[in-house]
Length: 254
Image (cartoon, rainbow, N blue to C red; front, side, top):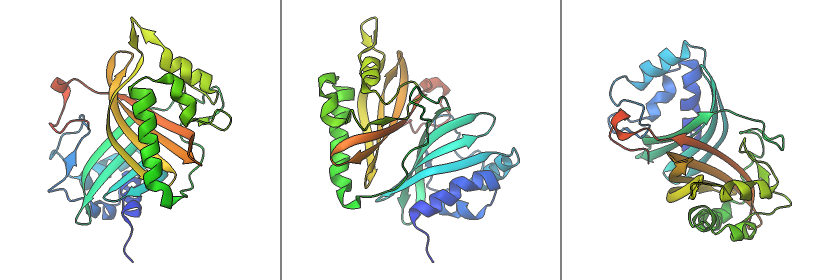
């Protein structure tokens, strides 16, 4: 039986833990484009890399995984030398993975509402609403986060049912509003500048954005769960983008 793209990526990520070389066959290493700026291309095959990593007793927990056409995106928890939370995005071509992006940060929390960075809903429903949910979340990010129309926040979020997994925030959207309003020397502390990609499956939508966090060039990965035309749950990671002089490949973060 042929595995779905999602299942193949699930097995690939899990092989970091097991060292099993079998799942690595899904990656076309001759075409593979790596967008993690800290990873040097061509220095070590994935089989050798994963075998080496497996000897350090890593733990890899794939919490959620989604498929959107040629893309698979996963929400993951890693325990290597430290505990981290990440989003992994893979692009397929001719049945194999040929491109990869990620966004990883240290695990923090729980937040003031008791949520951690990965708990909450995992069930994919409303697949027939994938495109409308994608468009809705894109409008939210463009309108509220990029353009800064904070008075429109409750046009998209249900203040009575909203669940927040950001470790510094909470379910009370007044906390989110205060964070989005905060400025440092007249510049927004959370400063979204550009949306690069919006991926979706059913009620889950991942938005990949670029901007600045506390004045530092950063990548924002935001996963939203939509229900009945509203955003009802949110997870995210924020990662500093290293200066170009420190990149180990020339493919760029996005």
